[in-house]
Length: 212
Image: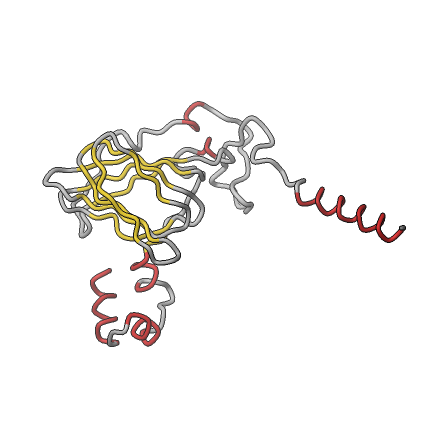
C-alpha cells in the first residue's frame, strides 16, 4: 500500500514539474537589448522602452529584386523591432520579379502564413514523407507552410508579385537548402555531396561556384 502511495505521489510530482514551465510572457513587455553581451533563449530586456521599439517601416516599400533569384525577403522580426522580444510573432515582406523564386528553405522555429499583396505565385511544401503539397495563389489569397518543412514560392506571372508573411516566432530563422549544403563554413566535403546527389565532384564544385 505504501509503495502504491509513494508511486502516486511521485507521479503527481513529476506531472507537476512537466507542466510548471514558465509561460511565454512573464511581464507586459521585454524590449530586446540587442547590444547586450548576455546570451539567453531570446534577448535580455532593456531598462526603458520607447515607442520606436515597437514599430518599423521595413515592409513599407518593395524590395530590390535585381539579383540572381529575382526575389528579396525583407524581415520585420525582433532584430528590426526589439519590442517583439518574448511576444512570439514576426513578419516579413517578400517581393518577386517576374519569374522570381524564393528557393526551397525551412524555418526551424516557426510556421509561416503568407498573404498575397500582388501578382500570383506557385507555392508548395514537402512533407517528411516526401509528398509535395503545392498550388497557385493569387492576390488576396493565403497559404500556410508548416513549421520546419521545406517550402518555396515562385512568381509564375509576367508582373511583379509580393506577399506579407506572418510567423509564430520572434525570430523564425531561415535555412536555404542549397546554400546550407553547398555554401557551409567550413564546407561539407565534396565526396559527401557528390554521393548524396549522385553527381560528380566536378559538378559539386560548379554548383558551389554558381551559388556564390
